[in-house]
Image (cartoon, rainbow, N blue to C red; front, side, top):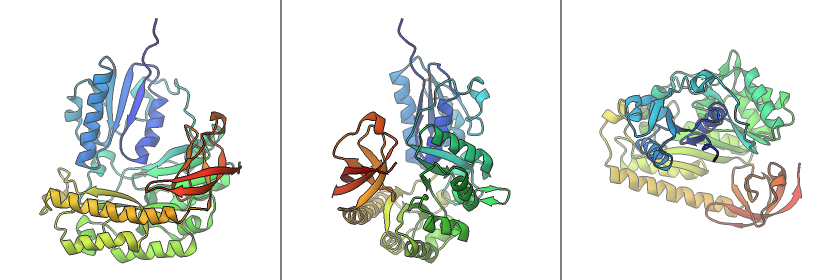
Length: 400
């Protein structure tokens, strides 16, 4: 008799979704279930979430499909009506054992060389373009002791790098413990963790304590993804962002003066009322902030948000501007990658044994695939070549 189909979790969107999907996987048991953890950050993300559900239903028409995540939270009726969807689970319930039948950990945990850990959820801010607060609710943080225990367990299971994630990570607060305090506790109480990486940060909330850890602590990876969105002050004000262009540029300059840090950023093209001159300021921000990991989005009006009621930029103009941002960012990234040719880069070897990420999050591919037993170990790689997207190198030694 054939074995029943294995449960599956399909993830779209942010790193917090990735972390939450791993928890869900350990809760759903051995049922014929497909969980689609959706994303609602843009209209395109919602479209992709719906398409993922339709593909899952076509591939496994007998499976129970459960829709969760921000897109499903915001439009429960619409997602509940999709073919094959048995139920919609809200974000507040998706990590509860009772939601999945009360049988946690029926599936063995998957070992990851690089593990995502969600520590904060929700957002108290009101950016005019964003629908995520409607899907995630107000800001709330996991207790620091609980976070440290989870990371210690992941390291015991083989994780060599942990990525802290959240909707608004820099707003983390457990009593008097800020994000900087949490990072300090993790580094102190989990000494076996070699590498800690931070996901998206708000520049305006990087305080002195966090700044010092980012620039001075070798176990904190020299890579930051910043929630910049635009490089024009009037655009930023209409987005209701809390920083101005000069704040972002100054923070990057201060960070890079202390340490060679690779900068990533979210950038929106074609925000309502954006003129050619306003767009030019955002385009110039890629060079001014030395952005080598750019996430570029053409503006997408989300129903119910203030920006959706503002005078809109034509869709073809927004898409053309997004293409120009990507082109400029690609030039910056190529120069950054080429600058690492000949260098030695430590990587955590990831599946299937031929790749990993350098401290600055450059994607490193190996000329020779390593055995499965080597996955999760840290190696030194000599970089021999650079493509437009990644580095190619050879192992020259084992670090740990």
